[in-house]
Image 1 (cartoon, helix red, strand yellow):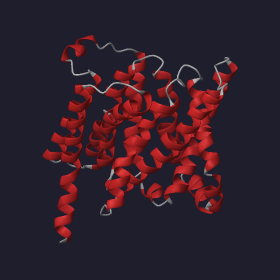
Image 2: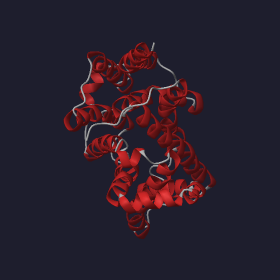
Image 3: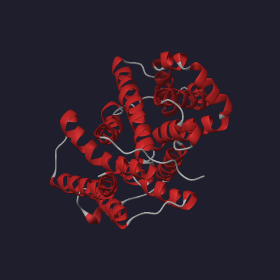
Image 4: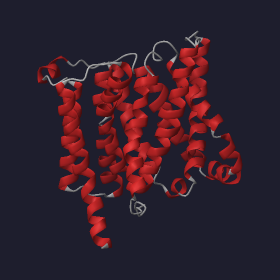
Length: 310
């Protein structure tokens, strides 16, 4: 099935595009200390069950549309929850207990490349030279940040089962992004769509969380734990996924996927501002490369559309 025609982006759409990496990166602030202190699947279940509860008024107001979507597209609805909230939620939290944040950051950004590959493979989407060059430059910027400006560090990277888990999550997120463009999904009101997918994610994660609970996995037991989970629900879940879905709807999966390259530099800035970490020269180099690559990969299409309207 050919991809849906994309509406012309407005200034507000570009603002949402820039907010995606900011909201996703709030996991750095609110998620610090959660992994390891709370069971990974318990964390993910609370995250998406909490998101569903917050959106219940919207789901109830649009219950006819939501129930019709879940009834007529049951498999698609569950797959979206499994890919976007299950594998990219609890499974990622588990993988982070087995690998380093640096490895995870570098591997997860490959989701943008898988989006391009899958669109080319299944939808026949071409890629311009500028888009390809922009993604390469942005990816190189991510590498600079992850390796802390030291190419020799590449020789010391070690990969384990957790790294393959992150790679699986990157592929899952790419498929999730493409599925958001299916006509039945794109026809849903944005907030209601997010609500039903959050519900699907909570249902998919519930059995895994129950197993962890049976095995005496740690539960949130302090005000600080609940504040971190609350931040994850409000910012890294509700705000981040809603903005990403909007970006996919307006720009398409490939351009929306470029926002993943912006997460490492945004995370660096947030760590400096909120966690007191030191800003190094390699951070600046990486940020400049990522920013330049993202502009190169996304701006030409917008400028071309603008010329056609004039």
